[in-house]
Length: 51
Image (cartoon, rainbow, N blue to C red):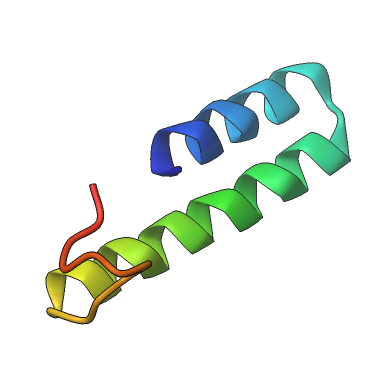
């Protein structure tokens, strides 16, 4: 999700389409939250780690 968010951010910046940039930011933040939750030992989606 983190890589997908970064790709959407780059595409949004290059093309100038604000909605793609916004979706990329949201996906990136969700990916980072899941990463942090997984590294802290909380089960994410029934798994002890998220990657």
